[in-house]
Structures are given as structure tokens and as C-alpha cells.
Amino acid sequence: DLTHSPTLAAIEEARTPFRHHEWTAAPILAGDASPEAPEPLTNPADPADHPGTVAWASAADVESALAAATPWAAPASERATILNRAADLYEAHFGEIFAIVAREAGKSLPDAVAELREAVDFLRYYAANAPEGDPVGIFTCISPWNFPLAIFTGQVAAALAAGNAVLAKPAEQTPLIAHRAVELMHEAGVPRDVLQLLPGAGEVGAALTSDARVGGVAFTGSTDTARIIRRAMARHLAPDAPLIAETGGLNAMIVDSTALPEQAVQAIVESAFQSAGQRCSALRCLYVQEDIAEGFTEMLKGAMDQLAMGDPWHLSTDCGPVIDDEARAGIAAHIDAARADGRLMHEIRTPNAGHFIAPTLIRVGGIKDMEREIFGPVLHLATFHSGDLDRVIGDINATGYGLTFGLQTRIDDRVQHVSEAIHAGNIYVNRNQIGAIVGSQPFGGEGLSGTGPKAGGPHYLARFGARPAPQTG
Ligand code: NAD
Image 1: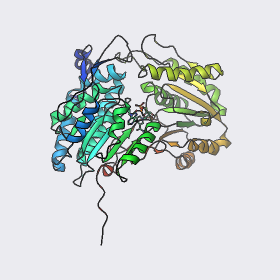
Image 2: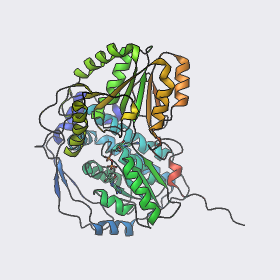
Image 3: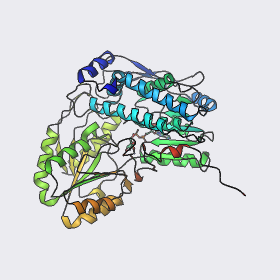
Image 4: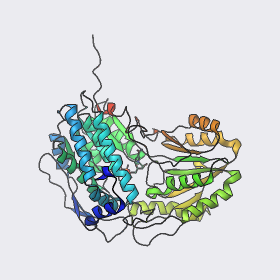
């Protein structure tokens, strides 16, 4: 299994039987479900490939789940044992999991491996820290499609470790992997009335965040959706119901003239284009010091030309598709506007079928020119003069987001100064702007990027437990 670091050949062998398998996703409730008629799902890399079908939860299913939801009465040690068993089952099924995330979410093999490892780390970390105190009650967990296993599992595992009943609503683009994950958690021993799955679009999420029986909400997704959920909770939930929101970013990196160019270019390419830029942590706006900008930009374009685009099933693919046609059209419109203004600096060729966007470089005056997060493989480039560094930092902070930030420099004092001045949850110095390590480098943003505390960190679980009643008398 995955714990024994399988070779590529072993991964291929484990994944191959699932190349044409069709999975089904449907509500998994404590009682009987009455979902809508199943619909086919499509591989984002290949319109002819159908990884399975999904039957969306009906309004009756939402009501039935709310009525049946029961907090997990088992002692913390038993919850921990079961969550660890779920981690073992995830690892044992790695071939199937890699196949689902490739065919449903368009993930390359390295991305799928990282995703499974993170999911397993979340299960084991929250199991190891499962608290004995009272849970909140019923927790709604709403997740995005871009880490359809890791983020889904992280939210659910934290809520379960704290003893809550969980109503899980995965993103509508990725119900298959969520369905399989819940099956494995039930197989590990999580009771069915403790963990229920409700596949659906925004309306199902809205229903699950505007019912007074819900005690708290864990949400990861866009900043706009988080605002809608906050308003719904304020209207319908108890005033102290926790919202744990992890949202979008407008992430910048500064490269000064002392940076090591090869190291910086590699970090930029990984940060902006890995997972086709569909990471909340991804680099969106690069600032290069004017003195080195010309040569550096040429190097960067050269590195972009080396990226292989294509079906993520193939091991040679660096950059897969974006998630669906709506995403493709939105990103393409942004690129077309830049082309019309003469700001397009570089793009590489795309395959014809599937929802592909080529890695693209667009010139901007600064981060102020960017109105919103473009969730795809599009990097924006600005230059700065060395005397303007503090103005650049001010502009980055003024976006109001605060998720990730990168710095490439060999000046020690600058590392200190910039890291203190930048408002960001995760700061990366002289490396790629990707990821976190559950347990030791938790992940999460400030301002418009999230409510904190950081996922995979020591303070996170506390938000899933009831606050002690205020002392009286
Ligand atoms: P999204 O906000 O469109 O959807 C996220 C989830 O919210 C989905 O399950 C969706 O069905 C649900 N939803 C939609 N409307 C709702 C409503 N009215 N009430 C309740 N739920 C509703 O986001 P997405 O496109 O799936 O994901 C991409 C976004 O997620 C990007 O902005 C990205 O930066 C962000 N993200 C953040 C992090 C982080 O850790 N900070 C991690 C991954 C993704």
C-alpha cells in the first residue's frame, strides 16, 4: 500500500483496472434516500470519458439527514482508532483513488499522490489530537473541487475527531471521490447517523447552512460563497455558531535582483502552473526587479515552453485541464481581454479536446490592476524598482487578501523586513509557493482569505468543540 512508497510501476498496476471503471455517487444517509435521477459525469481532460454518475440529494434527503444526524458518543480514543483505520483504508485503495481524481478532477499523478498523502495526514493528525470535550453538535462541511479528497477529508475528519455529527456536501464537480471517501470511513467504523453525504450544488449547501439544527459550518471555497454562507448563518443559526472559512487569494511573489534565477524560475513555474493553477495557494502576481526583468522574463518563458500539457492519466503530463467548460470560458475571456490590450506576454499551445487553458503570462502595472482571483494557469507579471519595495508591499496588503506570499532574495535583512510587513497566512522564502505540512506547517489565510485558525494546526480542532458555558454566580 501507499505506506510502503510504491514504485511508479506498482502505481500503474494498481490504477490500470480503473481506467474504464464507472463509479456512482449518491446521498449516503442514515435512513433511505430519495435522490434525483442520476446524471453522467465527464472527465475534464476527455469529453468522451465518463467516470460515472451522480444522483443529487433532494430536499427530502436534506431533511432526512438533519433529522437523523447524531453526534458521535464514542470516547475520543475510539474515534481516534476508527479515523486511523480510515487512513489505512485510504492507503490500501490508492490505485482506485488516483484513478478517480485523475478522471473526475483532471489531476496528474504527482498531484494525486500529494492529495492522498495530505488526506491521510489529516486523518492521522486529527485522530492523534481527538479531544475529550463536548462537540458543537451537527457540523456542515462544504468543500471545493480543487482538492476533492484532501480538503473534504480534512474538514470531515476534524469535525468527527471532535465528536460532531457531520453533514458533508462536496463540490458538485467532484462527488465520486467524496462518495468513495465516505464509504471507506463507514467501513472503518464511523456510524452512519454520525456521517452522512449529501451531493449537490449550491442549493444543497444553502439548505445545510440555514437550518437552526446545524451548530457550525466548515467551508472551503470562494470568498463570495463564504459571504453568502455568513449571511445565511447570521439569519438562521445560533449567534455563536462557528464558521471556519478558508477562501481565495491574490497571491504575490517578489523576485529581487539578488535572487538565484534558476531556483526562482522553477519555483514560479510550479507555483503558478502546477495543478493548472487551480490551487488557492497558487502564484497570481509576480513582481520582478526592473534591473533583471528582461533576461529573467525570457528564462521564464523558456521554462513555460517545457511544460507538457495533456491528459493527466499520462505520466508525462505536467499541466492538465481546468475543471469544466464554465471555468475554461471565464479564464479564456480574461486572457482574450489581455490579448486585445496588447498585454499578453506569452502562452503555450493547448490540446484540442477537453477543457484546457495553456499556461499564460500577462503584463500588469501591479497587483492593483487585478480585480479578482483568476483560478487557472495564468500568471501576471509586474516590475518594480528597488526603492519601491515598500510601496509594492503596501499594494499587496491593500488587496485585503492574505493567503500565500513568496520571496526570492539573498539579502537576509530583506527576508526579515518583508516577512514582517506582508499580511499572509503562509510565506515561502526561496522555494515554491505550494502546500503545507499537516502538523508542522498548517495552512490558512487572513483577511478575505479566511477566518483561521489554520487547517492541520494545533488550534483548528478547538473550533469544532463547544465553548465552555460562561461561569455564573
Ligand atoms: P465555490 O465557492 O464556488 O464552491 C465551494 C463549495 O460551496 C461547493 O461545494 C459549492 O457547491 C458550495 N456552494 C456554492 N454556493 C453555496 C451556497 N449559497 N451556500 C452554501 N454552499 C454553496 O468554490 P470552488 O470553485 O469550488 O473552489 C475554488 C475556490 O476555493 C477558489 O476561490 C479557491 O481559492 C478556494 N480555495 C481555498 C482554499 C483555502 O484553503 N483557502 C483551498 C482550496 C480552494
